Image (cartoon, rainbow, N blue to C red; front, side, top):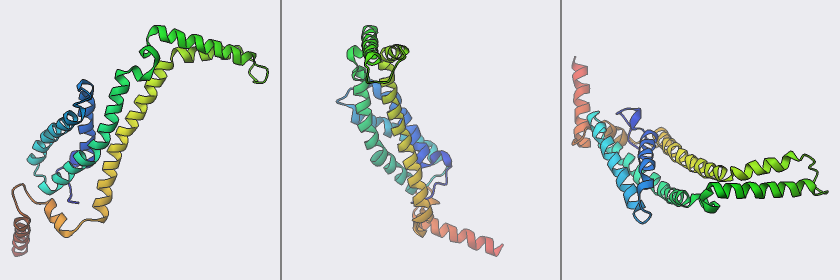
Length: 211
């Protein structure tokens, strides 16, 4: 894998984080039928803006190609699958009765109170505190929020995993599997061939030796 010489903000993890953040910001406005192409278009648009800055810093085309592949062919397919599920859950009220409105909360609270009262009265269950029934009542009232938090937390962990996986992949590849040609490509300027970069390096070396 070519080296990143443009700066840490162009590392795999950093770029995946920025692209996914842009997609997360916009995914709720996309229709389910067009979610995949629109998210990919969003990712490509964000990558284009990042590449404009990357080129100004003299980053190598070889590294950018590898980075772009990681974002579009590794991170995005996994993200799109989870984004579709999250959109469905959010639009369906996280599969909670009546979307978790006030009336449904009172129903859940009442069910919790009834179940808690029954459990307290059962002789073969060692619960003697009447407060237990009121605890279940409170849990019933906040059940929609708890379920939403569970799904949102799971989605956030997935996003963090994609960023971490990208950063780990770059680190592992850079440490163990770099060839001489890839190192040369890392210092290759846009529009310059590997042969040109190699010749330029030899010329600079010869100049320093003469001086």
